[in-house]
Length: 138
Ligand code: FES
Image 1 (cartoon, rainbow, N blue to C red):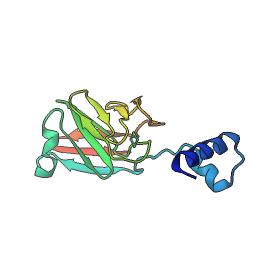
Image 2: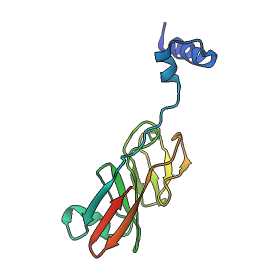
Image 3: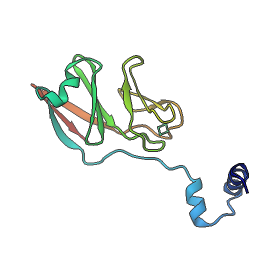
Image 4: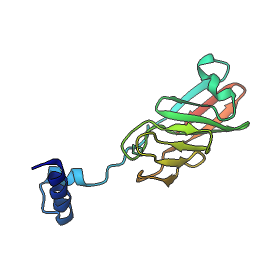
């Protein structure tokens, strides 16, 4: 059986649901989720966080992408794409969160899916600022 036949047969089996449990699980949609119990701080005066001192800057830390979308707006979302678990990035041109693996696009403000294969939104976290300190929490 070549690859094409295998895929054709596998999808046919998924459609009929006459399949063993292990194969059935592989046929269901799997969604990757972000970290839970998030609670960390970022010091904007620290060179490691310098990207966030510029509008359009972003960084990924603790499984979270933090974006400075405007002068006074920081957004924090899970950095794990819900489609297949790739790490997402911020696209300054479109102002959206993009997944490099299959082109999934998410809203930077809400984490909702704009386009592409992701089955669910990115988890959104709260960001508060006190002076140079950002606090990111679930
Ligand atoms: S892993 Fe992100 S779109 Fe597929």
